[in-house]
Length: 277
Image (cartoon, rainbow, N blue to C red; front, top):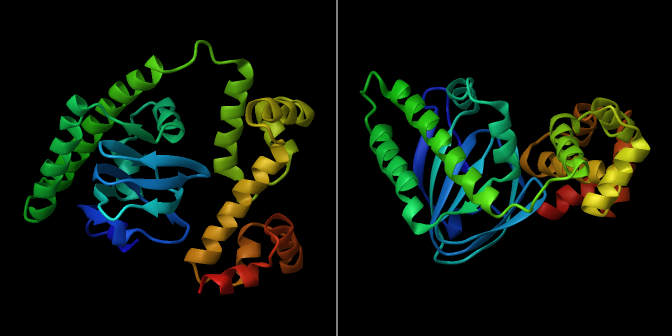
């Protein structure tokens, strides 16, 4: 999805995408991105969770989100703001980490019409700023816009979700959220339930009991699903060899890697890659 790529020289982009711009493969978005849907519909998967996109839907992609589009209507029109990972980290360094956990868990929200003025105003302001290449305060202005907008997002979306939130989140649900956060951070090189249980100061057996109650599947199965997703992204969006991918994910050898992938997908990594192209 080339329209979303930033460069060292220009750490942000602003623009519009439509149905024909949507990629038909998994990809990992290295930068931070804000979408706002003006018209049409789409279905999108973010880190294995599926969301429906309709007019006035706002989407916040944090850096390293894994994305897959399964449907986009012909009349789809989305404004986007993309900010490089490095600049995003710099602009948000003083924000509470819990805010980013909230965004990771709630990336998509459909705004009431009266609350769309803020994001539309930001899009217009950043479109003007993007064109103003000679402005010597351009990046400082961008940083201020992004900080103010994210704080406003947190206030508004947090209130929306709080209003629709069931009374009382159980200890098991809190632990499950922590488990998912750890998977996102470590699944490229940690595939054992015991590693995550140790990080959470609980036993592997209790962790699996929690995932069965909250998600209806074992902890190992959830870990493996995220690992397979990461592998598919590397197979689809990079030129790394099978051996290089196995090395990156710290598999003992290519043969073990191939058996692991086939066990969970029914096909070999080589066949999966050939099937794509």
